[in-house]
Image (tube, rainbow, N blue to C red):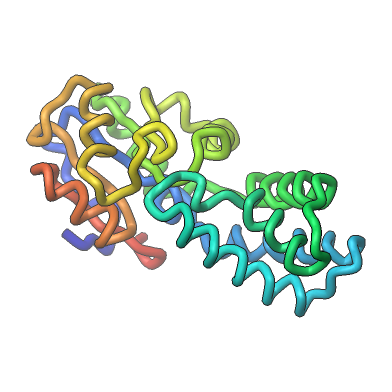
Length: 218
C-alpha cells in the first residue's frame, strides 16, 4: 500500500513494526550526495581528479555489486574505494581506502536527520507498546552506527542486516529473522519501506502487511 502521509499508516491491532532504514527513516540521496562530494574532494590529495573519481567510482561500484550480489558487502564503500584506487593508480592503497571511507561515512552520518513523520510514528508505536525492528541491507557496522547517530535505539529493539541474514531483501529469510527476534507472527506486524521490489514485495511474500513511502511522503 502506497501512503502519501505517515498518518495513513494504521497501528490498530499491530504488535510489531519492521522498518527499512535507508531512504525510509531518513532521506538517503541528499545525504549520499554530500558525503560523495566530500570524499571526491579528498581524493584530489591523492592525485585523482574529480572526473577520474566519478568514472572509477561507478565502475568499481558496478563490479562490487555484480561480484557480491545478494550480500551485505556488495554495498561496501571500502571495496568501492579500494578498486577505485587500483583502477586509477594500478595498486592497492590502504591509506587511500581507509581514509576516504572514513571521510565518506563521517560526513554521511553527520548529515543525516530522522524524518519527522517517521519519528512521530515511532513515538506513537512506543507509547502503544509496539515492538520495532530494523530490516536493512548493507553491513552491520555502518547500519549500527546509523542507529546510534539517529538515536534510534530508544525505539528499536532489534536490527537485522543483510550481512547477518546472509541474504538481501526481498528474500523471505531476512524478514523471518526479524520476526523470530521479535517473537511475532507475520499477521501481527507491518513493514514500512520505500522500495516496492525489496521492502513491499519481500514482506508481502511471507504475509506481512506493508506500507510504501517515498521522498514525498509527509
